[in-house]
Image 1 (cartoon, helix red, strand yellow):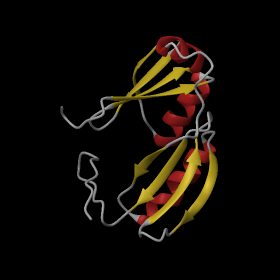
Image 2 (cartoon, rainbow, N blue to C red):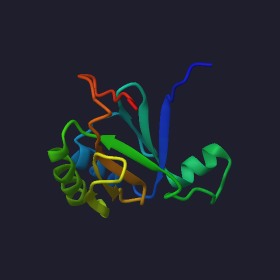
Image 3 (tube, rainbow, N blue to C red):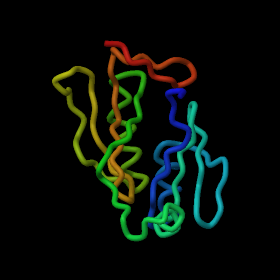
Length: 140
């Protein structure tokens, strides 16, 4: 089986509020939207934001979805980009969880929660270069 992720879907309470965070915070444009879901084309996969009750129904898991058991990451090309991206996300409705600092393993990162409390790590790591298509490569 091919090693890939095709779609990541996040349950959200308010689609308009979520769309504002992703559109104004990250600057991402939806490729599809209706009254229950918004899809964003990423570099090699799709990110979906789905109204939580509708996602729970779709998965046949009523009342079981809760954020916070994972984190997503948005890597940037330089250390200087980390804090401005975090501020932009906070201004678009996000909440700073951890101010940017240097972790023991190197690089520079901080965490921001989206309006539905999904954690986003905003990170720069010199060992993880980003190509012109936005793809990150893990190099030990």
